[in-house]
Image (tube, rainbow, N blue to C red; front, side):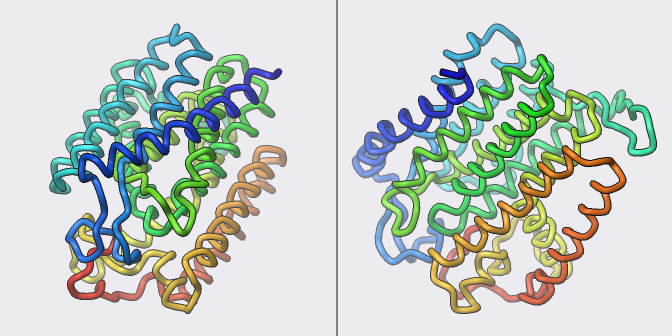
Length: 353
């Protein structure tokens, strides 16, 4: 069997087997979301165990480590950095941490990547040649990683949403990497397959009605892994598709996060302070059920991913024109459903992200 498919299937099976064990552990240790508490997600009505991120990370790490042999420093950097993110998330699932503490931990994990050689050294100039980042390489890599960690965390507000969107995005990175056919991306193809499999195996337990939440350990790791895989694969390849494809593949959480920052700035609200303005909240406000809202957002994420794949296959001019049309359409829809409107969360309820 093809190693890529084997990695995906093995990670999915591992996640399917590990998630019930983690669920029992969460119940025994009291890592449970209870409606009405400060740290709950605010849309469920009964206690739900957390810590699902442990199952996702374990399935990913075992398969990726075994398949690649961890022969390269960048492989170790991804796993060590991911372990830091998961550890911070587990602590937060038991004892909620402040936003500042989380950011410091995220920067530390991103710094591990940079120290192990996973960094954006150059990007393709659309007008020809490369733009070498030089001293900006490390800070821009850290910024990219921390940004992806947070936007995935912010979109983790409905059952199955973050896991499903991550599955779609990682499959997109996997497909485009295979199509590019570059030897130096071979191991990142395996990592992308392992990530897709781990999230896919977790989805049956996390889709509405969820039997377990991934918690910050899961959403944080998914954002970290997507950022690291894209940096060490497509971006590092310095092809024309290198920078645009990962942004499009993760377009839903990235643009939702971008709008959240603007909305909170306009309302003179700290960026890290939760509100009820994310795209999934808006869909619920329009009368959609959780399942309906999640399926709609799967479709939106699929459109972004399709755009990423098309961009990798067409000329640069056509690709950029397509991106402009897609972004214009997304902006119109976002304005129509009021994503930039300032609407405080319901009193007494925590609103995720």
